[in-house]
Picture (cartoon, rainbow, N blue to C red):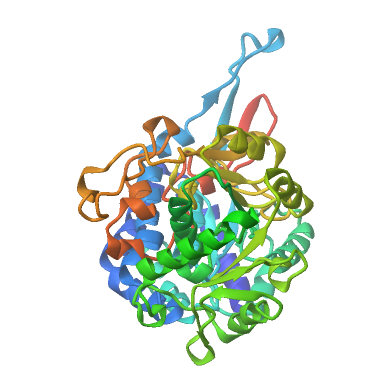
Length: 510
């Protein structure tokens, strides 16, 4: 038997013992995992620094802190999630006990990504553990140092038979996909996603694909352009642009293009200094292959800011492109790098038409002080998420689902709504002008008005404030951005590892 076959066989044998069905056992494993992030933070940060040049603060904010929040939520809510849920009866079942009973799916495969290597690999694992499954963890081989640390540390803290770590590249992944699993969770690109779906189809294995896509950003002339561009710059250049929900390109009217460019340039300087290459908080492209891919996109576009690069260091400066045409190379695929194309359009109608011509985006951003503009963008487009007057922070709202429509991310990772086959669109609206000043920020931000999300929008206190560029001190303003939000109602991954059996006593497979 191959190493991969042995890992899967051990995981299934361990699952068959039934020990993971105990809620106490699951909680113990989750607490051990949480202890890993407390005790080994420095080791984790050092490895990510070598892979992505991510700062220690950035690693804490956008990798481990979110995972600790997810674990705490799972521990707190586990009894509630695992409890049978009574449902309505009809005349034929009036005297019966009719309920939905959650149960583990079995052995799941988790294939992680490299851009936020801990967050996107361990968060599905948290859901798998909480749901009582066994899980084979395959970290991305692209993050060499992080994969090694994950392989070394996870077996020291959690059950190494139930949750084995398999490292390696394409051959090892292909061998894993030849095995039978009860669910496959993959984060990455569409090309590999298709191969995974093809392999899963042979065993009719359900699949969750967390993919990317081109996420548009429309800046209306009726908004505070300085604030809009500050937030767009933060969302775009976080983690050197290697974030699946980063604004991919900007649509705006020609009359404000120059102003947008100047404001983005100001924000780049503020976040990353005059020399981003020497800024400790500005990341690097993951490897030379991706460096070359991104640089090729510049060939037929005009650079308005940035453009500096160093292949030996995988460094590409925060870059702005102007007067970009729809047929330009940079508009043909997801950029996944620090290039911000600005494509002039003649108003909202043309912007909506252009967005609707492409694949439905994973995220859509609109900046405007006019509610009519926001409402039209909400009603006349389709996307996994829509955020008005900000970027990325919808990830921090744990009561919102996360996912895409069709190609960008075909399976919605979505609290309990997903169990019933709904396709919820996450919408978060922020006022165009910051409505409140946060007490500790007046001095840090020169007395500028600070934006606070109203409590009615469902955001819990905590990470939301850290994610937002105007709710943090300058040192954190340049920190790497989030890949996965810090928790979700119903544990997004536990929900995704669930199905629905239609019998008199319903079984909800997790």
